[in-house]
Image (cartoon, rainbow, N blue to C red):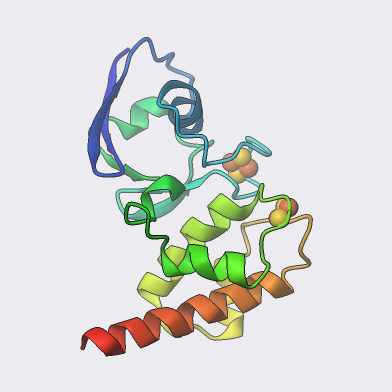
Length: 161
Ligand code: FES
Ligand code: FES
C-alpha cells in the first residue's frame, strides 16, 4: 500500500508498505530517519518514541497504516534547523548521553513532559520517563538533564514574556 502522512511538518509518502510493517520501520528504512531507535520492538523500552498527532507513542507498536493522514514528529523534528531544542542541549551538557540508544525516545518524552508541565517535580519526571529504559546512565544524569532543560525553557519563556 501507499502511505501518505506528515513527518516533521513535511508531506511524505512511502510506497509498497507491507500491512504488518511498523511505523518505526517506515521512518527508519523507507524515509531515512534513523533517529528513532529499535531496541526491543515490543513496546518495552521507549527508544522508538515519536509524537503521533502530538501524543508520544512507541512507533514500533504503531502499524504503518495507522499513520495514514496523520502527523508524526520524530526526534529529528525537535531541533529548529541547526538550533537544538533546549532538551537536546541539556542532555548533552548534563552528560545524560552514553551509548545514546535510549536518547531519542527520552528526548521526545521529555519534550512532551515539559510542554505539559513546565516545572515538573522529580516524581513527575520519574513517572513520565518510566517507560524509557536506559542501560548506561543510572538515570541520575537524565534527571539532571530534565531539570536543566526545565530551567532553560522557563528562563526563555520569561525572556519572551
Ligand atoms: S523499540 Fe519500541 S518500545 Fe522498544
Ligand atoms: S545511554 Fe545507553 S541505553 Fe541509555
